[in-house]
Image (cartoon, rainbow, N blue to C red; front, side, top):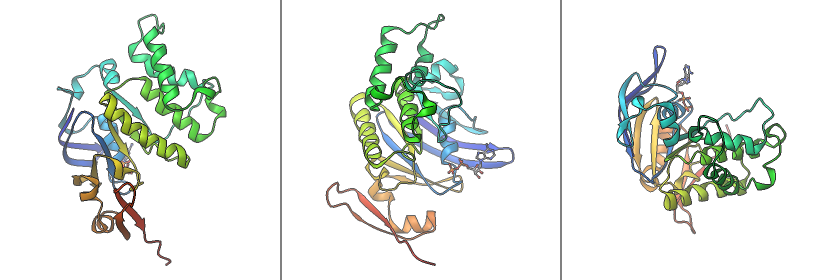
Length: 258
Ligand code: ADP
């Protein structure tokens, strides 16, 4: 679905990503991990077409990403940034409806398909009761869910989420990861998530580890999540064992007192 070949992204003179190559298959759930400033958000922004690599190539669904028209790209890729601040008084439903803009006719009327996609997204994110509330008057976590619902209403082939669970309470964190898992299995959605929560991403198919803008490693959670990796990449200590019920790797940080 996505082939990234020797991608370098610069902001001015500094390279935020250097020579990164990785392939992501259709229907894969992938997480991008690594410390602050390692290039995770830049990686997502490049896949969303929001920053243009200085060199290298991103091939998306058989064609170079840079060659796609914005409307064409928006039907393929939805991006939910970390900062979901909204400045205007839109209702939750209006925000979610914005996800349909790549599909609207010249006149901007919503078709039956548009309305069905909006309702589906509101239901998936459990926002039915909040649909008519102003986004300025809901909690940070509810607004985050509205932004994810907007991306789902876009019905993309690839969903890019930057720290999607950061504002969510425990129930919605668990639900979000379960939902993403279900959408990858049932709808062939490809999801790429940036997260610091190593336990949450241990249910993904593969992890991409970035360090200082370079690809440090990529592999299954059980291969990647090691005590050595946490110490080397994050500079802190952790104990890793197997979760007794899910059998996924379980990461427990050593909360040392200094
Ligand atoms: P992460 O998401 O892993 O924290 P980022 O992709 O946000 O990392 O940032 C990677 C590097 O690029 C950092 O050194 C950061 O300071 C720099 N950077 C990010 N965004 C910009 C920007 N808009 N302008 C200049 N430098 C930036």
